[in-house]
Length: 67
Image (cartoon, rainbow, N blue to C red; front, side, top):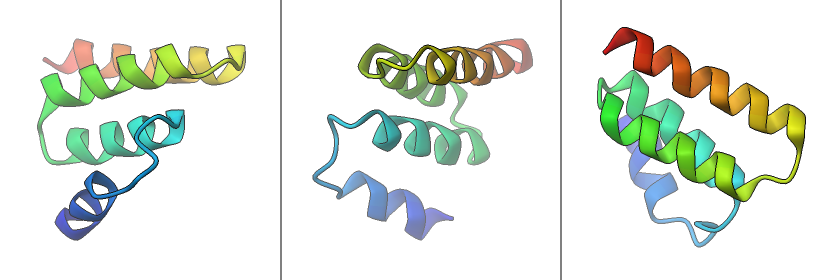
């Protein structure tokens, strides 16, 4: 998984919402909850799809509940 995080952080797609949601998921799996929550916030801010926004907000809330 570390290789996946390294790879995504080198991506040129940093403005795309999926970049931030994938990064958030990987950060969460590594126990980096604060960074994961911030990445979910960036993904939420960049998506225009309401269903995606709700999904990402739920994922962010799950992290907040664990902290």
